[in-house]
Amino acid sequence: MMRIATAALAAFACLSFGAAAQGYPSKTVKIVAPVQPGGGVDLTARTVAEQLTKSMGQSFIVENVSGGGGVIAAQNVARAAPDGYTLMLGYVATHGTVPAVRKVPYDAVKDFTPVAMVVGTPNVLVVGGGVPATDMKSLLAYAKANKVSYGSSGQGSLTHLAMEQFRTAAGFDAVHAAYRGIGPAITDVLGGQTQMMMPGLAAALPHIKAGKMKPIAITGLKRHALLPDTPTFEELGFKGFDGVQWYSIVGPAKMPPDVVKRLNDEINKALATPELRQRLSGEALDPMPMTPEQFGAYMQADIARWAKLARERNISLEE
Image (cartoon, rainbow, N blue to C red; front, side, top):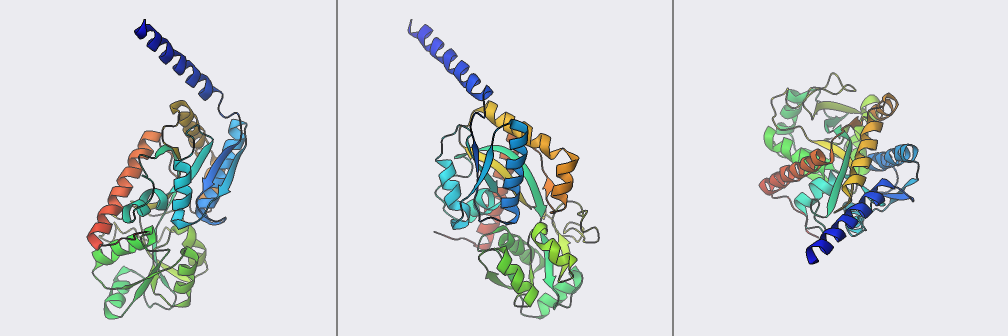
């Protein structure tokens, strides 16, 4: 009798779960953006919300929760009910570099459900207009002969770790200037207070087009369509420079698999449309469709990559 009762309860749970997943979403879904309005994270969150609102017949809204380099938002989402009604725009900081260099009050892997990878933008090595370098050879000659500095969006950010990876591989010394965000870092490169940096292409492109920044090399395994004359690090003999600034959708751990699959399917379907691809490409954001399993593996590999670099370079930022 006990076994029969247990089996009946299990069957009922499965039926209830399936019915709940089938009716999803039945109310407004919140996507938490762990930044202030504006920038690539916020833009991606609002693009996803807009597309899912259209395709799923229910409202998806964006709530901006900034602070702590995304830690506050991530902690809140990790503690939310795993019912699919609280999601987050997880990105390379919250689920990549920050867990690699800081003790944070959440586990980027165990406390979250990977739902969908959305887009990515490569990092581009740029110099300010006052630096007499136009290619890698002339930049390295200048960097090794002068006292140089580089800016980043913060200690332990991807813009910091990527520059340390390059500086170490190229063999020159430089002073690191950590800023509170990518905007101030770019301002000082443009003003000549620092000589170089490695921002995401989405952030750097307007300044490159305006002729105020000179691109030297770009991450990734192939040249980018928006900078066809800029070589990859790989072409220039630097291996392992394939990291990108990526943006994704995650939720609390133990979300219903059917809900995850539906969200993943709808996001990937939207990313395949010519209209959305054209819109994103104008912002230097490249679609990166993956299954939830592929995205989960990608995220774990990215954390391991930057944690290894942080250990090697003794980079940490304790709270």
